[in-house]
Length: 465
Ligand SMILES: Nc1nc2c(ncn2[C@@H]2O[C@H](COP(=O)(O)OP(=O)(O)OP(=O)(O)O)[C@@H](O)[C@H]2O)c(=O)[nH]1
Ligand SMILES: [Mg+2]
Image 1 (cartoon, rainbow, N blue to C red):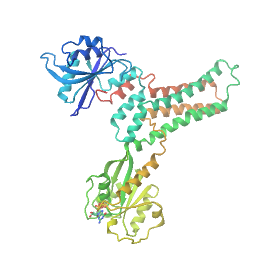
Image 2: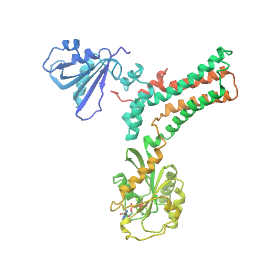
Image 3: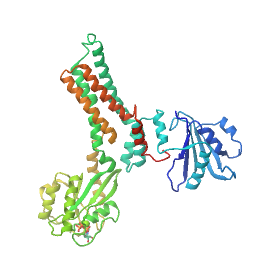
């Protein structure tokens, strides 16, 4: 445990109902009670310190030191170690959330002997005091930065230890394999029968390599979950792509005019789709153009299609696809596609039109961006496509880049173990690779963290966390 007592404003700057000053460390209770005056018991706090009820809200005031003026009306909660965020004694003072008021309270707490906390220092103490592992500490940052309910879900599951447990299961399997191999090295004659190479190969494969691969895969797919599925709106000029962009994003983001060739560049917007974030891109109308600016826009659109997970292909409703549109279809046919028939307000009821078979096999939705028809159906269809993409994530355990690098190193060492078992390599060589892979896994949860790793992780935090 640390010997200093730290403090910070724990709530974001700005106006709100409540602001919280957090104090953590051995002096937290004495400092907390010395700045707090219970309502109806003004001036006498020594009794409070002797009989503090923990996890109980005390109502009262914080007063200025010199003039003894009331600075704020507050609620104070004293929380006894170890059942606290940091595992140290913690005091939280809830005041009204004006930044001046909170700063004044903070100043008094500092005058009474607390140190201003570094960014992430509360969470760092929670880690150093063994309440959470590194993956859980990192999830606190993800939680704060979560942009969608899905990334929030991942962060919450990681805070509660999902990644830590997964890593620990893999590590336990490796430790058991290692001890079996080491027993073999130490007492070769005793364990001759217990060393079953086939069983060990299967264990390495199923309990170690496969779970590691799945975690790496989840990381590689995590752009989809954290940053969003990438969708692009494409089609011939003037079919209403930008109008659809504006409807879906509920913003007046893209310029709409009656003139073909209005959109030249890629226009991006973040849209939250039923909890899954989506990056939606509007693009220049695709056709063969002589205009050099438009041509560049078309090149960009084509590049962006390759990087997209979903393509909304816009056609003019009731109009037979042109040669140009057949060409666009060829360009996008390997992607997830929704064909959107726009301007359906212009089509007489029942008017039939010819559609190529491959078009009919895709999802087809009629809308009118002008009148706003059909957008609920379009949104539902987009949601369906997103769900198809994310159904691979049966467990939302998503390692970050740091974890994934360590997992890749662990996988490389374990694959050497696997090869070694296949090729009957000496057991002490296998033990070396096993030890190596166990160390890589320990780096993830932070068993023996180096100071620079800790600094790098905790410097991403804000003060007060
Ligand atoms: N009647 C009708 N007109 C529409 C509809 N959607 C768009 N328009 C009109 O079609 C014209 C072109 O719309 P945009 O959204 O700019 O089309 P675009 O595909 O982005 O065009 P470019 O960027 O030039 O390729 C505008 O005059 C829109 O008002 C619709 O559903 N019905
Ligand atoms: Mg446009």
